[in-house]
Image (cartoon, rainbow, N blue to C red; front, side, top):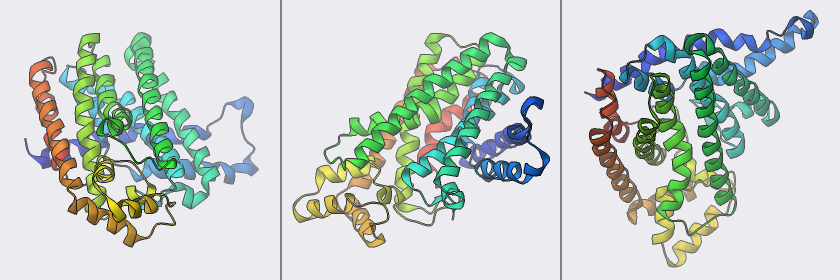
Length: 356
Protein backbone atom coordinates (compact mmCIF):
# COMPACT_ATOMS: atom_id res chain seq x y z
CA UNK A 1 0.00 0.00 0.00
CA UNK A 2 1.34 3.44 -0.94
CA UNK A 3 0.15 6.94 -0.15
CA UNK A 4 -1.03 7.71 -3.69
CA UNK A 5 -3.17 4.56 -3.75
CA UNK A 6 -5.15 5.88 -0.79
CA UNK A 7 -5.45 9.35 -2.33
CA UNK A 8 -6.77 7.78 -5.53
CA UNK A 9 -9.25 5.73 -3.50
CA UNK A 10 -10.66 8.89 -1.91
CA UNK A 11 -11.06 10.40 -5.37
CA UNK A 12 -12.83 7.26 -6.60
CA UNK A 13 -15.31 7.33 -3.72
CA UNK A 14 -15.87 11.05 -4.23
CA UNK A 15 -16.75 10.41 -7.88
CA UNK A 16 -19.41 7.95 -6.68
CA UNK A 17 -20.85 9.97 -3.80
CA UNK A 18 -20.88 13.51 -5.24
CA UNK A 19 -23.53 12.75 -7.92
CA UNK A 20 -25.89 11.57 -5.17
CA UNK A 21 -25.52 14.98 -3.52
CA UNK A 22 -25.50 17.05 -6.69
CA UNK A 23 -28.79 15.73 -8.00
CA UNK A 24 -30.51 16.42 -4.67
CA UNK A 25 -29.40 19.99 -4.00
CA UNK A 26 -32.13 21.43 -6.22
CA UNK A 27 -34.79 19.43 -4.36
CA UNK A 28 -34.41 21.91 -1.49
CA UNK A 29 -36.44 24.42 -3.54
CA UNK A 30 -38.78 21.87 -5.09
CA UNK A 31 -41.69 22.61 -2.78
CA UNK A 32 -44.94 20.69 -2.63
CA UNK A 33 -47.84 21.96 -4.71
CA UNK A 34 -49.68 23.36 -1.70
CA UNK A 35 -46.76 25.66 -0.76
CA UNK A 36 -45.13 26.45 -4.09
CA UNK A 37 -43.58 29.87 -4.58
CA UNK A 38 -44.93 32.17 -7.28
CA UNK A 39 -42.87 32.56 -10.44
CA UNK A 40 -42.14 36.21 -9.72
CA UNK A 41 -40.01 35.08 -6.74
CA UNK A 42 -37.86 32.73 -8.81
CA UNK A 43 -34.82 34.98 -8.35
CA UNK A 44 -35.06 34.41 -4.59
CA UNK A 45 -35.22 30.65 -5.06
CA UNK A 46 -32.18 30.86 -7.32
CA UNK A 47 -30.30 32.88 -4.71
CA UNK A 48 -31.27 30.42 -1.96
CA UNK A 49 -30.05 27.44 -4.00
CA UNK A 50 -26.85 29.20 -5.05
CA UNK A 51 -25.97 30.01 -1.45
CA UNK A 52 -26.61 26.56 0.05
CA UNK A 53 -24.71 24.89 -2.81
CA UNK A 54 -21.42 26.76 -2.31
CA UNK A 55 -19.72 24.43 0.17
CA UNK A 56 -21.00 21.17 -1.36
CA UNK A 57 -19.80 22.29 -4.80
CA UNK A 58 -16.32 23.14 -3.50
CA UNK A 59 -15.96 19.45 -2.51
CA UNK A 60 -13.40 18.46 0.10
CA UNK A 61 -11.37 15.25 0.22
CA UNK A 62 -14.50 13.17 0.98
CA UNK A 63 -12.62 11.35 3.71
CA UNK A 64 -15.65 10.73 5.93
CA UNK A 65 -17.95 9.27 3.26
CA UNK A 66 -15.01 7.17 2.10
CA UNK A 67 -14.84 5.63 5.57
CA UNK A 68 -18.50 4.66 5.25
CA UNK A 69 -17.88 2.99 1.91
CA UNK A 70 -14.57 1.39 2.84
CA UNK A 71 -15.79 -0.21 6.07
CA UNK A 72 -19.03 -1.44 4.55
CA UNK A 73 -17.10 -3.03 1.71
CA UNK A 74 -14.60 -4.57 4.15
CA UNK A 75 -17.57 -6.42 5.66
CA UNK A 76 -19.07 -7.42 2.33
CA UNK A 77 -21.74 -4.75 1.79
CA UNK A 78 -22.34 -3.76 -1.85
CA UNK A 79 -21.47 -0.20 -2.80
CA UNK A 80 -24.96 0.75 -3.90
CA UNK A 81 -26.33 0.12 -0.39
CA UNK A 82 -23.74 2.46 1.13
CA UNK A 83 -24.05 5.46 -1.20
CA UNK A 84 -26.86 7.44 0.43
CA UNK A 85 -25.39 7.06 3.91
CA UNK A 86 -22.02 8.20 2.57
CA UNK A 87 -23.66 11.17 0.85
CA UNK A 88 -25.48 12.11 4.05
CA UNK A 89 -22.21 11.90 5.95
CA UNK A 90 -20.63 14.34 3.51
CA UNK A 91 -23.60 16.71 3.79
CA UNK A 92 -23.22 16.65 7.55
CA UNK A 93 -19.70 17.98 7.04
CA UNK A 94 -20.98 20.79 4.83
CA UNK A 95 -23.52 22.19 7.30
CA UNK A 96 -21.21 21.72 10.28
CA UNK A 97 -18.43 23.61 8.48
CA UNK A 98 -20.78 26.45 7.61
CA UNK A 99 -21.79 26.80 11.25
CA UNK A 100 -18.23 26.29 12.53
CA UNK A 101 -16.94 29.03 10.25
CA UNK A 102 -19.51 31.45 11.65
CA UNK A 103 -18.70 30.45 15.24
CA UNK A 104 -14.96 30.82 14.65
CA UNK A 105 -15.31 33.76 12.25
CA UNK A 106 -13.05 31.86 9.86
CA UNK A 107 -11.91 33.69 6.77
CA UNK A 108 -11.51 30.81 4.34
CA UNK A 109 -12.86 27.39 3.53
CA UNK A 110 -11.38 25.12 0.87
CA UNK A 111 -9.36 27.84 -0.77
CA UNK A 112 -12.04 30.52 -0.98
CA UNK A 113 -13.94 32.89 1.30
CA UNK A 114 -15.98 31.41 4.11
CA UNK A 115 -19.70 31.48 3.39
CA UNK A 116 -20.56 34.16 5.95
CA UNK A 117 -18.04 36.51 4.34
CA UNK A 118 -19.82 36.03 1.03
CA UNK A 119 -23.41 36.32 2.26
CA UNK A 120 -23.43 37.55 5.93
CA UNK A 121 -23.54 35.43 9.07
CA UNK A 122 -27.32 35.29 9.20
CA UNK A 123 -27.67 33.95 5.69
CA UNK A 124 -24.79 31.50 6.15
CA UNK A 125 -26.41 30.00 9.25
CA UNK A 126 -29.64 29.65 7.30
CA UNK A 127 -27.80 27.91 4.45
CA UNK A 128 -26.29 25.50 6.97
CA UNK A 129 -29.75 24.77 8.32
CA UNK A 130 -31.16 23.73 4.94
CA UNK A 131 -28.15 21.51 4.19
CA UNK A 132 -28.77 19.92 7.60
CA UNK A 133 -32.37 19.22 6.59
CA UNK A 134 -31.19 17.69 3.30
CA UNK A 135 -28.86 15.38 5.22
CA UNK A 136 -31.82 13.88 7.10
CA UNK A 137 -33.79 13.58 3.87
CA UNK A 138 -31.03 11.46 2.34
CA UNK A 139 -31.01 9.25 5.40
CA UNK A 140 -34.79 8.90 5.17
CA UNK A 141 -34.47 7.89 1.51
CA UNK A 142 -32.27 5.00 2.64
CA UNK A 143 -35.47 3.03 3.20
CA UNK A 144 -35.54 2.28 -0.53
CA UNK A 145 -32.01 0.80 -0.38
CA UNK A 146 -31.63 -0.96 2.96
CA UNK A 147 -35.11 -1.22 4.45
CA UNK A 148 -36.72 0.37 7.49
CA UNK A 149 -34.76 -1.37 10.26
CA UNK A 150 -31.31 -0.48 8.97
CA UNK A 151 -32.47 3.01 7.99
CA UNK A 152 -33.51 3.79 11.55
CA UNK A 153 -30.33 2.18 12.91
CA UNK A 154 -28.25 4.50 10.72
CA UNK A 155 -30.29 7.53 11.76
CA UNK A 156 -29.81 6.54 15.39
CA UNK A 157 -26.04 6.34 14.82
CA UNK A 158 -26.07 9.80 13.24
CA UNK A 159 -27.88 11.13 16.31
CA UNK A 160 -25.33 9.60 18.69
CA UNK A 161 -22.39 10.79 16.60
CA UNK A 162 -23.66 14.34 16.15
CA UNK A 163 -24.60 14.69 19.83
CA UNK A 164 -21.03 13.81 20.83
CA UNK A 165 -19.59 16.06 18.13
CA UNK A 166 -21.61 19.10 19.17
CA UNK A 167 -20.61 18.53 22.81
CA UNK A 168 -16.97 18.65 21.70
CA UNK A 169 -17.67 21.95 19.97
CA UNK A 170 -19.28 23.30 23.14
CA UNK A 171 -16.19 22.47 25.19
CA UNK A 172 -13.81 23.89 22.59
CA UNK A 173 -15.71 27.18 22.31
CA UNK A 174 -16.09 27.48 26.09
CA UNK A 175 -12.39 26.98 26.78
CA UNK A 176 -11.47 29.36 23.97
CA UNK A 177 -13.79 32.06 25.27
CA UNK A 178 -12.45 31.60 28.81
CA UNK A 179 -8.86 31.62 27.55
CA UNK A 180 -8.35 28.39 29.52
CA UNK A 181 -4.66 28.04 30.40
CA UNK A 182 -4.13 24.87 32.45
CA UNK A 183 -5.29 22.15 30.09
CA UNK A 184 -3.95 18.60 30.04
CA UNK A 185 -3.68 16.21 27.11
CA UNK A 186 -6.74 14.45 28.51
CA UNK A 187 -8.67 17.72 28.29
CA UNK A 188 -7.73 18.19 24.63
CA UNK A 189 -8.60 14.58 23.83
CA UNK A 190 -12.06 15.18 25.29
CA UNK A 191 -12.63 17.57 22.39
CA UNK A 192 -10.85 15.41 19.83
CA UNK A 193 -12.79 12.25 20.68
CA UNK A 194 -16.11 13.77 19.69
CA UNK A 195 -15.13 16.17 16.92
CA UNK A 196 -12.69 13.85 15.17
CA UNK A 197 -12.50 10.43 16.80
CA UNK A 198 -16.23 9.80 16.53
CA UNK A 199 -17.30 12.21 13.82
CA UNK A 200 -14.46 11.81 11.33
CA UNK A 201 -13.51 8.16 11.67
CA UNK A 202 -15.45 5.98 14.12
CA UNK A 203 -18.94 7.22 13.19
CA UNK A 204 -18.57 6.84 9.43
CA UNK A 205 -16.93 3.45 9.89
CA UNK A 206 -19.74 2.31 12.20
CA UNK A 207 -22.34 3.44 9.66
CA UNK A 208 -20.80 1.27 6.96
CA UNK A 209 -20.53 -1.63 9.39
CA UNK A 210 -24.17 -1.30 10.48
CA UNK A 211 -25.32 -1.61 6.88
CA UNK A 212 -23.08 -4.68 6.53
CA UNK A 213 -24.73 -6.31 9.58
CA UNK A 214 -22.12 -5.71 12.31
CA UNK A 215 -22.78 -6.90 15.85
CA UNK A 216 -22.72 -4.54 18.86
CA UNK A 217 -19.33 -5.97 19.88
CA UNK A 218 -17.91 -5.33 16.42
CA UNK A 219 -19.26 -1.77 16.45
CA UNK A 220 -17.62 -1.11 19.81
CA UNK A 221 -14.28 -2.36 18.49
CA UNK A 222 -14.63 -0.15 15.43
CA UNK A 223 -15.25 2.80 17.73
CA UNK A 224 -12.02 2.19 19.64
CA UNK A 225 -9.98 1.91 16.43
CA UNK A 226 -11.71 4.98 15.00
CA UNK A 227 -11.08 6.99 18.15
CA UNK A 228 -7.35 6.30 18.07
CA UNK A 229 -7.16 6.96 14.34
CA UNK A 230 -9.20 10.14 14.76
CA UNK A 231 -6.68 11.43 17.27
CA UNK A 232 -4.03 10.97 14.57
CA UNK A 233 -6.19 12.78 12.02
CA UNK A 234 -6.78 15.84 14.19
CA UNK A 235 -3.30 16.18 15.64
CA UNK A 236 -1.88 15.99 12.12
CA UNK A 237 -4.39 18.61 10.96
CA UNK A 238 -3.32 20.88 13.81
CA UNK A 239 0.36 20.34 13.02
CA UNK A 240 -0.22 21.11 9.35
CA UNK A 241 -1.98 24.32 10.35
CA UNK A 242 1.39 25.46 11.70
CA UNK A 243 3.57 24.16 8.88
CA UNK A 244 1.58 23.82 5.63
CA UNK A 245 -0.53 25.86 3.22
CA UNK A 246 -2.61 22.74 2.43
CA UNK A 247 -1.41 22.77 -1.18
CA UNK A 248 -2.36 26.41 -1.63
CA UNK A 249 -5.83 26.10 -0.09
CA UNK A 250 -4.89 27.97 3.11
CA UNK A 251 -3.33 31.42 3.02
CA UNK A 252 -2.92 32.06 6.75
CA UNK A 253 -0.31 30.25 8.87
CA UNK A 254 -1.39 29.42 12.40
CA UNK A 255 -5.11 29.80 11.77
CA UNK A 256 -5.92 27.77 14.90
CA UNK A 257 -3.89 30.20 16.99
CA UNK A 258 -5.72 33.15 15.47
CA UNK A 259 -8.98 31.46 16.44
CA UNK A 260 -7.68 30.54 19.91
CA UNK A 261 -8.33 26.82 19.48
CA UNK A 262 -6.94 24.54 22.16
CA UNK A 263 -4.63 21.98 20.55
CA UNK A 264 -2.13 19.45 21.90
CA UNK A 265 0.69 21.82 20.93
CA UNK A 266 -0.86 24.84 22.63
CA UNK A 267 -1.66 22.90 25.80
CA UNK A 268 1.94 21.64 25.93
CA UNK A 269 3.27 25.16 25.37
CA UNK A 270 1.09 26.60 28.13
CA UNK A 271 2.39 23.92 30.53
CA UNK A 272 6.02 24.48 29.51
CA UNK A 273 6.47 28.20 28.97
CA UNK A 274 7.42 30.40 31.94
CA UNK A 275 8.23 33.91 33.12
CA UNK A 276 7.67 36.90 30.86
CA UNK A 277 7.04 34.59 27.91
CA UNK A 278 4.15 32.95 29.76
CA UNK A 279 2.60 36.35 30.45
CA UNK A 280 3.10 37.37 26.82
CA UNK A 281 1.44 34.16 25.64
CA UNK A 282 -1.57 34.82 27.86
CA UNK A 283 -1.90 38.38 26.57
CA UNK A 284 -1.86 37.22 22.94
CA UNK A 285 -4.34 34.40 23.52
CA UNK A 286 -6.70 36.79 25.28
CA UNK A 287 -7.07 38.80 22.06
CA UNK A 288 -9.77 38.18 19.51
CA UNK A 289 -8.95 36.73 16.13
CA UNK A 290 -8.76 40.12 14.46
CA UNK A 291 -6.77 41.71 17.29
CA UNK A 292 -3.95 39.21 16.89
CA UNK A 293 -1.19 39.99 14.42
CA UNK A 294 0.70 37.54 12.24
CA UNK A 295 3.92 38.41 14.09
CA UNK A 296 2.30 37.46 17.40
CA UNK A 297 1.11 34.15 15.96
CA UNK A 298 4.56 33.52 14.48
CA UNK A 299 6.05 34.19 17.95
CA UNK A 300 3.83 31.49 19.44
CA UNK A 301 4.80 29.04 16.69
CA UNK A 302 8.48 29.85 17.34
CA UNK A 303 8.00 29.08 21.04
CA UNK A 304 6.26 25.82 20.16
CA UNK A 305 9.34 24.84 18.16
CA UNK A 306 11.84 26.00 20.78
CA UNK A 307 10.08 24.36 23.73
CA UNK A 308 9.36 21.10 21.91
CA UNK A 309 5.58 21.41 21.66
CA UNK A 310 5.49 20.44 17.97
CA UNK A 311 7.80 17.46 18.47
CA UNK A 312 5.73 16.42 21.49
CA UNK A 313 2.51 16.44 19.45
CA UNK A 314 4.13 14.55 16.59
CA UNK A 315 5.35 11.81 18.93
CA UNK A 316 1.95 11.56 20.62
CA UNK A 317 0.26 11.26 17.23
CA UNK A 318 2.60 8.48 16.15
CA UNK A 319 1.98 6.69 19.43
CA UNK A 320 -1.76 6.72 18.73
CA UNK A 321 -1.10 5.47 15.20
CA UNK A 322 0.91 2.54 16.55
CA UNK A 323 -1.83 1.71 19.06
CA UNK A 324 -4.43 1.83 16.26
CA UNK A 325 -2.37 -0.50 14.05
CA UNK A 326 -1.86 -2.99 16.87
CA UNK A 327 -5.54 -2.92 17.77
CA UNK A 328 -6.50 -3.43 14.13
CA UNK A 329 -4.47 -6.62 13.92
CA UNK A 330 -5.70 -7.92 17.27
CA UNK A 331 -9.40 -7.11 17.11
CA UNK A 332 -10.62 -6.20 13.62
CA UNK A 333 -10.27 -9.50 11.81
CA UNK A 334 -13.93 -9.28 10.81
CA UNK A 335 -12.98 -6.49 8.38
CA UNK A 336 -11.90 -9.24 6.04
CA UNK A 337 -12.87 -8.35 2.48
CA UNK A 338 -10.08 -7.18 0.20
CA UNK A 339 -8.87 -4.73 -0.93
CA UNK A 340 -10.85 -2.69 1.61
CA UNK A 341 -9.15 -4.37 4.58
CA UNK A 342 -5.69 -3.37 3.35
CA UNK A 343 -6.78 0.25 2.95
CA UNK A 344 -8.12 0.39 6.51
CA UNK A 345 -4.96 -1.24 7.83
CA UNK A 346 -2.96 1.51 6.09
CA UNK A 347 -5.19 4.30 7.41
CA UNK A 348 -3.16 5.32 10.51
CA UNK A 349 0.05 5.47 8.46
CA UNK A 350 -1.68 7.49 5.73
CA UNK A 351 -3.00 10.03 8.22
CA UNK A 352 0.28 10.69 10.01
CA UNK A 353 2.27 11.04 6.79
CA UNK A 354 -0.10 13.20 4.69
CA UNK A 355 0.92 16.70 3.68
CA UNK A 356 -2.51 18.36 3.53
